Every structure is written in C-alpha cells, then in structure tokens.
Length: 278
Image (cartoon, rainbow, N blue to C red; front, side, top):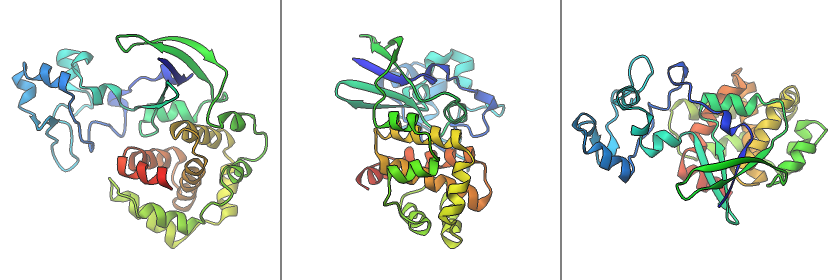
C-alpha cells in the first residue's frame, strides 16, 4: 500500500516530561489484544487493568504508570516496546482513500502542534510504502497535493478571503458557538468558552483582522484541517473561524485554543461523525 504523510511527520518526537498537557491523563486507555497477551505475563501491570483498559486514578484520571515527574514507569521499566497501540500511536491519525493511506499528526499534542503551526514552508507530502510488517518505507517527495490543499498553498491574498472562498455560507459567530455547544465535551472548560463567545460574539471584521495578522499560522491550520478531514472545506473553514473567535474573545494564545479544539472535537468519534454529516 502507498502511504502519504506530511513532510514534518518524521520530525515528531514525544517531549514526555516537558509536556504541559500530558496525554497520560484524562483519556481512556484501551489495550489491544497483543498488548494484553504481553501484560498477562506481568502481574505488576495486570493489577492496574480492568476490562482491557488501564484503571485511571484520581480526579484528573491519570494513567497508573504516569509518574509525578511526567515520565512513564512502563517505559522506564520495560522500554517503549511494552506500550499498547493507543500509547504508541498517539497523536497519529490514519485516513484511507483509493488504496492510499494518509497519515498525520493531531493538534491535541503540543509537540505536533508546534510542528504544524510553526512551519514556514508550504504543505508538502512524502510518499512511502507499507511493508508486510506494517513499517513505512521510503520518503520520496509527492507532488500531487490532494484535497484542495494545493489551492491554499498557492493562494496569495488575505487568509480571511481564502476562508470565504472555502465556505462562503459560513455561520455567524453566535450560530457557530451554538452548534458546537450541541456536541459532547470532555473538559467542562470547553463549553464555558463557547458560552462566553455566544454571550459576547466577535464581529467578522475583528476575527478577520486577527486571522490576517497571523497568515502563516492560519494557512497552516487550514491545510491541517483539509488534510485531516480529507478536503472537507466546510469543516476546515468553520473550525478555523471558531478557533480565531475564541482566541480573540478571551485573549487566549492561538495554539492553546487549537489544542483544546482538537481534544474536544477531533478525538471524539461522536463529534467527528456529526461534523462529517454537517
């Protein structure tokens, strides 16, 4: 199978204890069958497992192997090969179309977020081949940029105009916040942010001025969403507009709002299904 991935993909590396928002807390950790077979041979691991999931601890639902210093006790004791698939793969995602596997990194991870938003170059893909063992081989440049991303790469006007081209019939700020309030949420802080935006909506002019003031960052966000959602222009434009509006209305850093958005929306199967039907 041919596999495509962004050219920054291979630069990703978990920052472990340096991460301010660890993925080892607040997330359910389901364990795949192969890992369960391995864990059954280790009583010190099995005692922290119930119904093929790690038993989370405390109010912040921490993985039982997350140490106070932010490191993973499993890795320290056994090495990275001991990790289950969920822990190994996060924050990667996989999409499939026409016998091609599209691999990417999610915005929920700080290290991935920096790679995606801070990049100076246009969005580019590299091609590889998946071996029989599942290993991705090769890193040849791939010139056919899919999902309308080539249009974004070549666009030379204002980013706010680009968004209007992607989705001219966008919701207004209040409607957008109201729609996202109908979705499920993980952190109670997220709906409060949406309610605050709905109560004091940001004007389109103010939002667009903010977007046009950060052209590199928002171009990178647009290409990310188009790639993540396989060319869905509506999702890309609505997501970017909402992120900008929350950042403006509440004076929050763009990266932090993008990270929270990804956690709440893109890592919920329920929410992504609703967005796909939008």
